Amino acid sequence: MPTSQFRLFLLFFISLFFLSRCEPNPYREGERLYKTNCANCHMDNGEGLGALIPPLAGADFLEKNREALPCILRYGLQDTILVNGKTYAEAMPGVQALSDIHITNILNYVNQAWGNSHKPYRLEEVQQMLARCRK
Amino acid sequence: MKKLLFFFLTLVGFAACIQTPEKRTLPILGERDISPAGDTVYPTVPDFAFVDQDSQVVTNATFRDQIYVVDFFFIHCPTICPKVKKNGLRIYEKYKNDNRIALLSHSIDTKNDTVAALRRHAQKLGIDSKRWHLVTGSKDAIYGIADNYFSVAVEDPDAPGGFDHSGRLILVDKNRHVRSFCDGTDAKDVDRFMKDIDLLLAEQ
Image 1 (cartoon, helix red, strand yellow):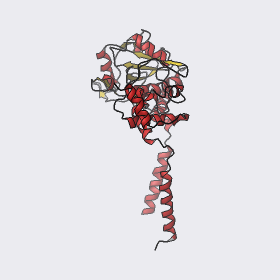
Image 2 (image 1 turned 180 degrees about the horizontal axis):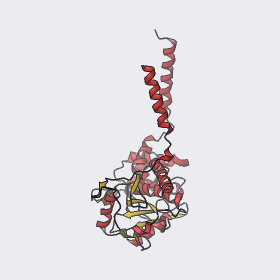
Image 3 (image 1 turned 30 degrees about the vertical axis):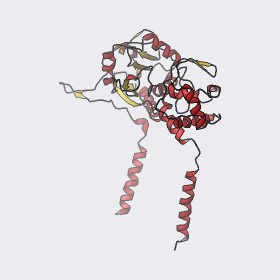
Image 4 (image 1 turned 90 degrees about the vertical axis):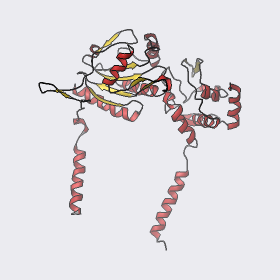
């Protein structure tokens, strides 16, 4: 028969378990993929690097180019772009190894990270956008 | 017996705390040698001559009476370089008004990273060429000197971007001795490294 102390212990561990279930970040997978594939250049905090690599945090580009982002992630970018009024001319390599789901997860992580709050992507939506740039 | 052991361990714990980190001196890194006369000989950075983003020749004499921070990179590096550069910028910003220290980045892509390309790169990073030299030179010379800075620089068609290299930042003192290094991609390790820089500045 469990003593009251044991019960208290049990309660403690059960609450710990539930606490750990409360994800503060629903885009864990996206975050993991971002760290592996994007953070080397765009940095962990999304601030980019000088005039070489544009920021993602607070970047107007994300909202203005919502339709183009999935293709940019997969196939890269050669064009000169304007982000928050600043010009960026370096090429960005794409990551062809990313699946449609990976791309959706990364975009959704970026869209709500570092104070960003853009509309989330649905997988079907991303697939349609990718179909348009598939070679 | 147990009590005694506990007492002893507490004592050891305290002793470990008493040692203040400020009194620490940085070691001279690398394998030392004994000269025929019996003196200890420490490894030193050999003579070098490279060209920076302003087409100025950079030699050991450029850093006379200065300590300097070294790294290896290339402009079209798709992997670790931007992170190392970011942390390099933190060091640059902290010491940019301090004449006792400078930075030296070697490009390992000697074919593409011309002086003009390095100049553009420096402008985009917003750095002053007197404080932070981005240099190019003969491939053999650059790859060779990487060893002296305990760094790796090799051409590898299988590596992302075509080159493999370590993202280390290396601290060199006025006597051409390597005194500390860190993983330039790890912000926390760079924090520690900057403390080493302060320590070396205080020493010299």
